[in-house]
Length: 495
Image (cartoon, rainbow, N blue to C red; front, side, top):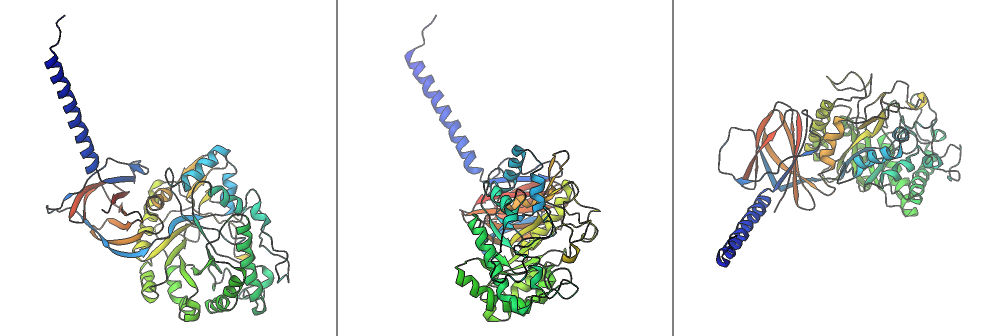
């Protein structure tokens, strides 16, 4: 066997090392150039799927493609977060599952890395139409107990209770909570008949203690209630008839003094109106009083008008320093469906998510800072629901949730709504700002953000067939393929 010449061997080794270094350099350069991460959910079956990375190039070419221009220098509203609502109905559904599957559902909803990373949640004060673990209840059903001696959150500590639900969820992620109330204890009202559901003025102080007791009781159980809404969809026929002018007086003269006396830092919100235009109509009764306005942290609205987004911009222009939140919307069988919407709830098809994705984008474009869906979890029948006609809660109340749990088969369905909402909650962090984005095409709906860590997020909904789209930013550009009927998240560093 011939021996290899030492010189030739040395040369071979040097050449091998050089080739290796070149390959490593190429790989590093490719990694450096792949500065945009892309995630897609689509009608083809993608579900938050991370695609092949892409890169910006110098923007020199003209194109006939739809073009979205991203301007990170123009910062608009600051974001609070995205999420849904804790109700006993959801915990009942979860408790029908084996513990390991329960954990996987919580993880998929709240884990910021492997799940949707919900950061903003709603938890009603005592009973609502999905307080399904028992009969109607409040935290003090003892007539005349104005000192709240018998105040108790015991039901919320039960296996299907709200405190149990919230504490389990908090193991998987971090979130803030806003709490509205359908009804105060019945004995605080003149009556429960039509137009009688006004709080007796002599009991405004007792009601303030009721709110304070609720916040303190939850704190004693390790849960912070960050925001309080006095009433849900008030000044209407179905829940409390309390007017907004009265709420303003309650806040100024009773709630704020009680909170100060008890050392409570929970912020006060105004609203939970049944739709967007109602807010524009009714909020001035409170907000035009500067004494009250100083105590209002944010304005909260529901989306049951389905499409009157521009009224939110009108409200922002009227009260530009007060953030706007969307805090409830859903499908309700027989009564609340958008034009052309589904025939019944719940909706299992992924394609339904496109409707909700467009609603989120349109709310964001009209100054919404926080977006909260109604029921996070319900069963295959859109329930279970509570029946209490005197409190506005009838039978046949099938609704659509973010997650559907079949209590018979134990199958878990993550709806189209879940995936479209997750494209926001997973990538847009609390403290982010919406940034100015323009251009696009008739079937593209989009919104952009800059996160506190400097990352830019662009969410693009394609409501039509597959198309390429040009994204222009900072004198750079990239051509991105948008799958048919999809939502695509592009994320990159701003510097």
